[in-house]
Image (cartoon, rainbow, N blue to C red):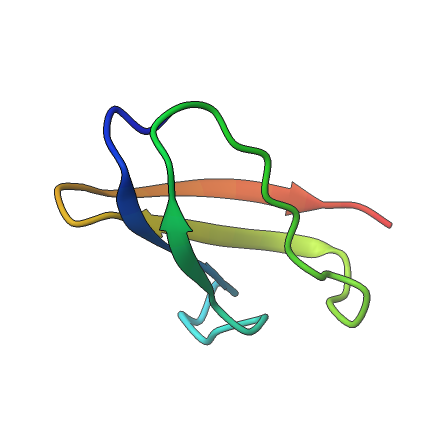
Length: 66
């Protein structure tokens, strides 16, 4: 959830730290948002995501199963 209007960038990386998809970036209004990256060409596996705003950066782990 965004507490204020802000610029957001989302990156998805493989375990080597290489970008697995094209980064998603844009300006979003405060509130909840659902953003679905295009993962059609990405194989199943373990990935990390990084969500960055002007104030914070959050990194998490995800498993993609196809």
